[in-house]
Image 1 (cartoon, rainbow, N blue to C red):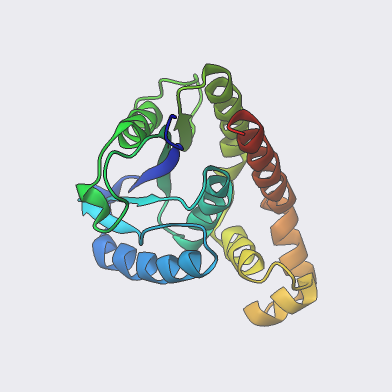
Image 2 (cartoon, helix red, strand yellow):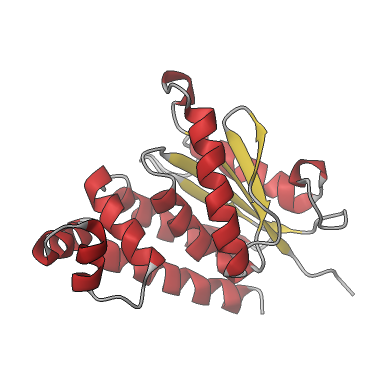
Length: 216
């Protein structure tokens, strides 16, 4: 019986060589995100900086990856990131440190992030790519995220701040989110709208459904 595929995420910081002290900032942010994502049962292993500006994890499930991707982008601001996702087998027991694990899932994730870096998927810039053994899924999910990233790459730091707070407390109203940010509700509402917040949430829902259908 074939083993159940796992989801590996490999991410790196865009233009890290031009950023001062980013490694400390990245490590601090990833530690906080790891705690939250493990509590939410989104990841199996803490995020680990594995080489230079790169970090990795193993998702708790394939369908958790869209939520992970969105939250990482918001929580790591102002650091812009590229993400490669691989769906496949992991040949080792899943335990830390993540950089000692191997298998097709890691190879596919590496291929995906290289596709982002080298602009292999489209003639326009993207920040996310998936690779698996299911060709129609790869074609569809990468188109979805290609269009998604066209919007996401336009989001300003102030808009990401509102998005990040809204993601942390999704049950809160715009007014409650505004209070947490010490901003007017109208400002937060405008930031969410102009930051494509609702489109980002719909991408997560649609991508989750696509993943569950393709790998059921």
